[in-house]
Image (cartoon, rainbow over all chains, first blue to last red; front, side, top):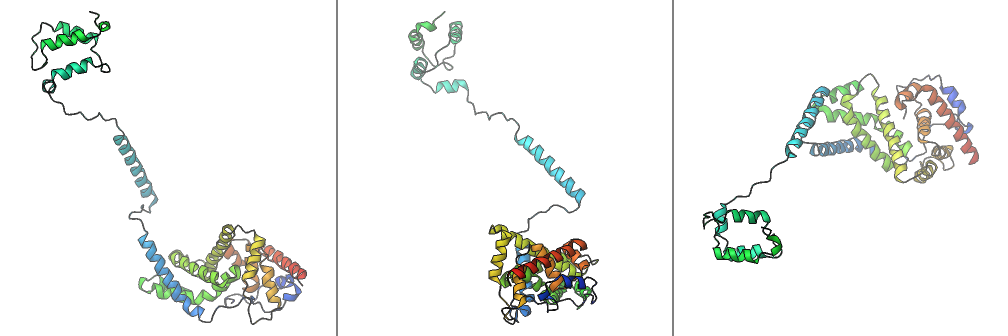
Length: 173
Length: 180
């Protein structure tokens, strides 16, 4: 098992031999292990090459689609550019965006689609927001205005009825 | 085939496998016994040896020819053996003494030697040594490797290697006296 290239003369050999237990001195140096089958070493090179091919195939299939360049400066520049790009992208994505505007129809058209009874019911409902003082004052200021019936499709009688049903504590005017 | 010729062929893509097969054939026996003495069990030695050759295949393009190929191979094999033994000990939570006992159970003694031969006792005594000390003793006693080359293989100074060998010899002597 010794390589033939080892020097025949080894200056430390005598000292090392003397350090051994007496029973080991001058005996053939052979490990007391059962040798492998005689064919083992005949097949080993082929087995090793098979294993290498399998490992190489696995390495190729597991290789990443993209690897960083090997030149250190280029790698640093690439990493910096990637990080900067990611930062800018994060800023752009995270910017405050106004909520999308719902498509609006003309107020007159919206009101036209609601019956007077529904409006009155809404305004007089207990849990609905009541007509505020400001709204009432506006209503009074508009009393003489020529409101288009198309804008407020409510009859005068319905308006009067609704106003009459308002609770007294809202009628500060 | 000379090492230089193997390396030259390996550098050529179309001869790479043939060159590597030559390398394996040239060094397989010495590396096998180096590994086998450390891990004891043949199947484990076989698996580890093949893994070592796979690593050699990958690392060979980076081999600098300022070192001997054999020394370089031995160094890889040594590192792999020590790593394997450490990993096995961690895996089974084994203290070193118990691992020595476990390895002793795996000993497949050479039938050609008488059962009471001193070689059997030496093998058992060696299993009580720490991994690195056992490695040093193997390289020096069985392989008769010069200390300078051992220093290259193990990355340890010549003085430390000599001290380690002599400590190992004393421990073996004490073990043999206890089990006489």
